[in-house]
Length: 200
Image 1 (cartoon, rainbow, N blue to C red):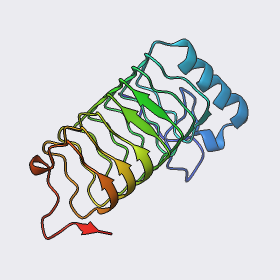
Image 2 (image 1 turned 180 degrees about the horizontal axis):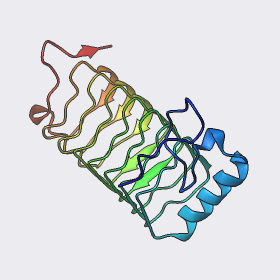
Image 3 (image 1 turned 45 degrees about the vertical axis):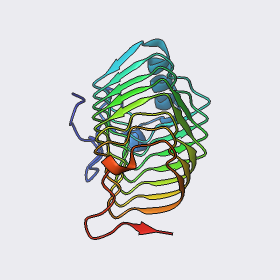
């Protein structure tokens, strides 16, 4: 698992960044540190047990990589590709995804809580036991996926194509759902209410 060591700067509670003794915000040269992290990810097929908190990635390809037990909290992903990427036990909380594509991805036991998704495509992928709680998901194509036991608790979802998905035991409790297409998905096996989901 990634290091839980905190930044060496007094009163900073962030985790250290990419094997240094400081978080990205307090790196002596944030641009150089970020470039080193991008290079490390690009060169490795397996990226494991590392913290990349706050990293910004644009037009970056994770295709075919294994991301395991990594910490991507507060990261920004713009026009990135995750084709055939395996993501296990990773944390993407409070992150931003814009224009990204996930095709044939395998995501398991990972957290995307309180994140923002806009104009993304996640297709033909497995997204098991993963957490999108409190996230804002807008104008996304999420068709042809297996979302078994994933959670969208208290999320905001608008203009989403969930067609032809397995959503067995997926939870949408307390979520706001607006203009959602669940065609050919097993909605009867998903959880939409405890006291009632909110529909726009």
